[in-house]
Image (tube, rainbow, N blue to C red; front, side):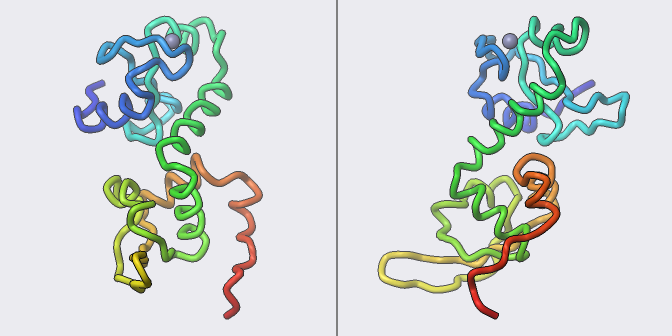
Length: 163
Ligand SMILES: [Zn+2]
């Protein structure tokens, strides 16, 4: 199945052009593996793709020497590494409360990827600009799939801001 070039670039960049499992560098010859297979209605989208070398791809698909669980653990790690810890925190907060006030420097990559959307300039104190961002559909999807754990999905933590 054809994967659009822009999407391919994002997935390859995510794993730094290495096989996400063994680290083997094959550059553009890496295979983009569907975590949920296309046959099982897995989408061809960033959330469902991971870069693997030929050997590791065979180990997942054919010999099953690499488990689906292991691949999922790797994808979760890659997503979080891309987001950075501040990005993860901002996305979680926006997931629970629809919006988050945060410095643009910390989340510009999330905005670029369409996970958060700029709403308004919130305040400008000293040298810090703080903007308000809302979470997009894609942001929710990514957070649900790879960022939040089961308990975080079920129950949002109590806000430390009093209502
Ligand atoms: Zn590999």
